[in-house]
Image (cartoon, rainbow, N blue to C red):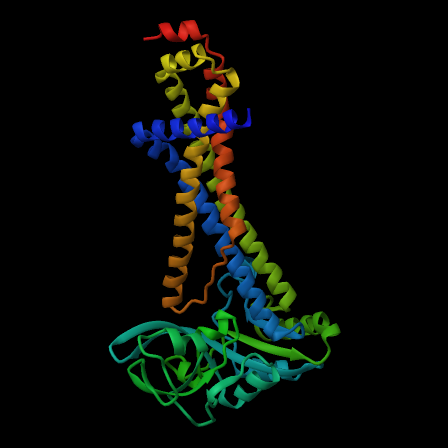
Length: 405
């Protein structure tokens, strides 16, 4: 009995393959909706997980006693455009250093610039730091360490320290200390290379003097200020005091203050909102795909009515007929899921490469569990929407089916 059951399963699978091969175009169009939905889910989840992991890694390197000060947005929230044209400057760094409980404050300029090396040009992310704050940034905050060379000194210009990935992966030839790059038309010397941190935020960035990233008038307009407090238990209270100081200096919520926990929650909210939106779109695509599978299977049942009659006449049970058509529906879903997995992974990786090439730190995280979930979901959609057509086929009267023309 077990042998007969296995033989029937093999025959069901062969019949499903033959049916799909005979109706290639219809099967491809039916699987297309599954492909779109699954690829969207895979890309969405891998990008979201990768982003969260990168943010967590970056924040963990700074510790829980760090405060971030960045442009606010009035009513627009911490990630919107600033409500004032006045930038963060040296005075703000000095003011923050004077707040009780703050033992370190460093201003950083973040910009994206093109970098030339020999015949190649790449877009890279730059951190501009005051040279006299460099050692504090590296040693006191414990963010990164120099692997080769040194940090630039006060008075030096047109010198850079490279993140590990920038040095190793950006150009055809690996970059080394004392190599010359061309940045904004100026020859720039590499004086140091960082140890790998595992965080793309630092591994894929170039660190230079803030003066080299000053605006056209020579003013330093910091993108963000890092501050470290001397008591992690008071980080929220000190952050509130910093916020009050910034409000007094620049106006209500012109600049916003975050702790690592608050920043992680903000980014998580944005990521979750994006996930829900794109997840809804992917869900609609899968619903449409499911309806397409149901329509295709109903057509297949109608076209194979006489075949169903013959199968039932020679002893096939209702369960056997149901299994045959459910196998076909599941196979369409499986094919769509496999292609969707491949496209989803490819899309997220290509997007990561493109954004990294433009100087934006970006990572994706694809797991076997995620890929298997995509396959299971696609097969589930196929079986769910293929059930009613399969049931209709199983309920056919063999005599009437044999008379069908």
